[in-house]
Image (cartoon, rainbow, N blue to C red):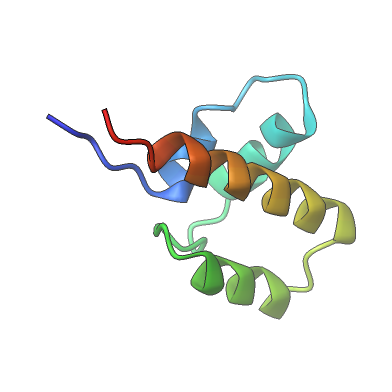
Length: 75
């Protein structure tokens, strides 16, 4: 059985990690309106419309690539 995670579900696994990805995971967990999707464009538009900091955007971009690569592999 293949479990397909959204970006938000994947990211929340990093809560407690003492790295920037852990920091944004905490912020996303507190944001009830953060899109629960895999769709990069939808998440990016949401972040842009909420005046997200440059540092958050950099971590989002990097972590989304990690998410995509780790969830798109076929076993």
